[in-house]
View 1 (cartoon, rainbow, N blue to C red):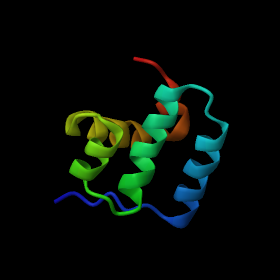
View 2: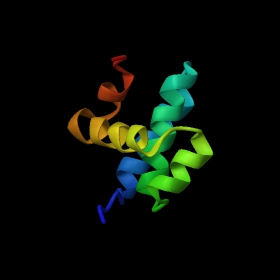
View 3: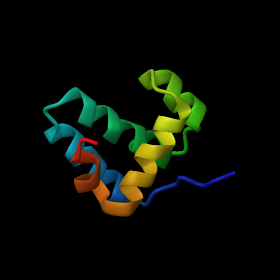
View 4: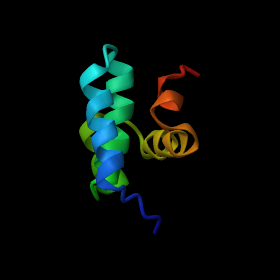
Length: 75
């Protein structure tokens, strides 16, 4: 099982980015990463945000590769 736990510093960065997010799609991406980082399961996050599990994992991988700036890029 993959660990998605994040440091308090990372969680604070995500909180700040979420407050500044103006677009719903970006806020949802940030929330997905934040919730995983807090210890929620992929399944729980997917259910709450109405995403599929693959998308939740993809958002976390995107964040890992480039932080909040990477999440801001529309694919």
